[in-house]
Structure formats: structure tokens, C-alpha cells
Image (cartoon, rainbow, N blue to C red; front, side, top):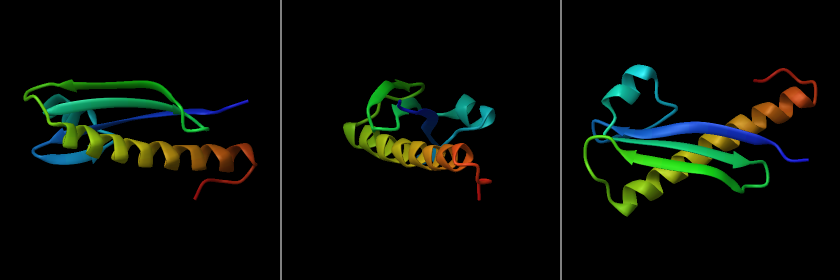
Amino acid sequence: MDSVAATSAGIVGGTAILDLSYEEDSRADVDMNLVMTGSNKFVEIQATAERTPFHDRHMADLLDLARTGVAELRALQDQVLAGRAPK
């Protein structure tokens, strides 16, 4: 059995941000949603140029950032499932 975790990332004011708040999302130049399994397979990748088209280097940066966020979420899930309180 595999796990699943999801997060968002975006570019706001030229800065890549993980897990955008509503306010950040409403101002984002680029918005990405990423869903991955615990075995590092993609369920969904959705990226939208909300205001300005973006380069593939931006896509790579957001993908790296979102993968980091998903890995953190999976670590927390693993702690909870093992009966340990998240740190």
C-alpha cells in the first residue's frame, strides 16, 4: 500500500514559495499543484501562468520546491502512522 501527499508552490513577486496562502495564491504569477505517492510517483502536476508565462527553469524550481514539501508531509504522515507525535 502506498501513501499520497499534495502541496502547492508558486511564484509571487519573483520569489518561489511553498504552500501558498490564499493571499499569496491570489497574487501569484505562477501557481502549481503537485500530488505524489510515497514511492515518488506523480498523481498530478498542474501549473498555470496566472499573470505571466514562465520559463522551464521556473517549472524546474517549482517542481523541486514542491517535491521538498511533499517529502516533508510524507515524513509527518509516517510519524503519525507509527504512533509518534510530529515534531
